[in-house]
Image (cartoon, one colour):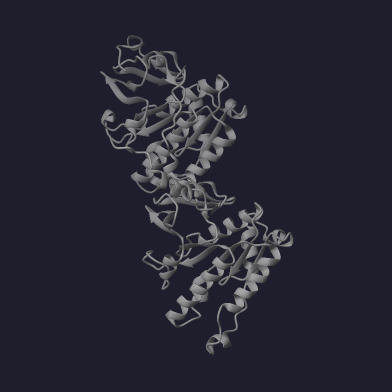
Length: 491
């Protein structure tokens, strides 16, 4: 048998291994991606094209570290110091107040262009100024914004490299953690004209923005991180009034809560068809063609849950709250009192108005504040308008994961485009992930038009496996008498 225990000299060698010290960014999603933060006492390059958010991200890391007790210097080569202070204030980051408290300093170097033309300029003088300011406030963190602007002052490529090596040596000698921003080339493969920066830095992060189906999304990718593990995937992010928000897909672990007790679907006959109702914390898909009753079924459930004193968050991509409430009231489903009692909250938006990350951030923020027991999405078929079917799938899976982790019942409605809804359950490829599938369809018996409902599947329940006819009236949903009840055992 081969021993897997290390030899004594191997143990001794491992005991001398020193884990890499890191400076947290204080941006939760980013620290997760970076496995703790950026490397301490080393250089990190943050590069991207115009509008990708590189200066905003760097500024937030700089500000949040200063607020957490890590004083820093910010050196601006492109924007003036006052412009940076104004921009930061729009995000609620008061750099002036922090400067007065001695927690940070913003420096916009005045460069003598005559000395540059004469070949007499070097960064030694600038480094001397930075050293003095760093000593004054006890700074060990420095943000250099738009280093490429400084490098463009030197026409000789070898001189550009020499000055960068001088900068790096100074940072190392002074024990400074450096965050440097630079512009990416149009191909988004390396820093514009200065690809040696990527080799010089210990951590390299690329940002970009792209259009998918006329919807813009910003993305972040860690390209390199010496001495540390990290997530190498692309990660979408958004810029909010509170700063940058990252919700890494890699954090979606399968740590879901088990399904809870059986709760009413909103109507006794429907409960019998479903084998008792729905399970708390389950994912329910109600699918069918337009006008088949999807919103009515989800509103029935909403009304029943609110009457039990349970909170419901209802996301509508197709109707305003007022329109939905009036439409349901004509069917004897009155949701207005539950809104007034704050047991029901509506969130409405056009799917194409924002990208997946913005929609998720809006929903998750409301969930955190409202604490619902149940969540409705009407309809998932509209989510394709967020950019593509892939974007819709990403949205639904991540929302489903969040609901399952928190034991929230999640009901999705989906509009099918054919007369064979059983063959087109979800439309975005999530049917295998759901717990309960309810299929609605049109039904005609002679000259009487009606509708039918089928419990296609319901995990952990003995449910009917045949279609049951129903009618939508001004008194709500009425089942045909000969179709009242379950008709078999399917699990």
